[in-house]
Length: 359
Ligand SMILES: [Zn+2]
Image (tube, rainbow, N blue to C red; front, side, top):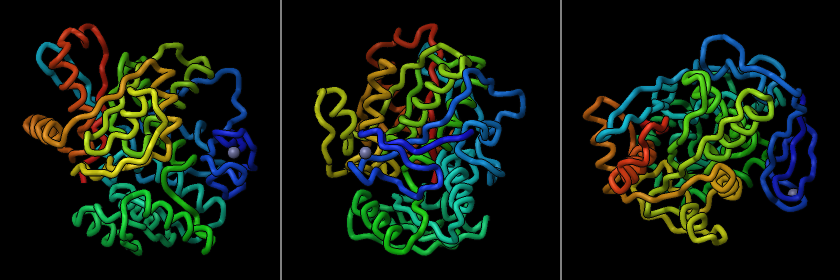
């Protein structure tokens, strides 16, 4: 589908061939603005990420390692049935692969021979794997809290690693500078990744035959939250469904800037991370403003869970043979927390928890 890039703040328009990732007038992030038809359907093919290519900013072939098509499984907590979407079933064990498929396709489409990215681990592993597979050089800037197991996986995937003496936001600044100075395609939580992450909501719609009442999701940089909301708006705009899902953002208590901003009606401010859930340890979310809008517009909720609550959620899932890392179970920990206080809350509701990764 034809598109241009639009600043999310001042509305400035950039050509689809532009390599801009922030607005050069106001420094805000951009979004993909399609020339939508009045109506469209999602088609009848096999349910997987590549099925939704018509809603990605890709003109040729979509490069894919078979991401998406992840299972939905029922999971009972007390008297309520939850539905878990197992994103660890993706090629590099996290939801990040959906975004990497679109980003690496786009980098190659735009003629780049090299990509770079800031990461706490999972995104780096995903991009490094796609870059290697599709023959493009890759440099990953890792925050100081990146776990050794994840660093090893990225190394094995053949990427150059730069360990930054700082948190994710410092790694992000370094990657942005590196990409500008060296004319390298910048991967990460920007507009193209957001487009790829949208496939998760299209899949849920296809798998359930409707949008659920609630979706619980872990939030770090808030890209997935913003992506799901954009996907829901597209489903509405294309007259596929009018149903509305309430989005429920769950952050780790040791790093919950979005939850604080939303619940206290305050401006988003940087927060120093103290959580062990490295995958969602982001002190200042890139998609924070869009994430807040997604919560407001979907009549959503935001809540924090302690590392102890994350650990016990992880253990509870492990018993049911659902394997995930701490950050990946924040959604489930949030659902457990709400269920404990308001057991009737989920009654007769379709509730999906995104289990986002296991690295
Ligand atoms: Zn702007």
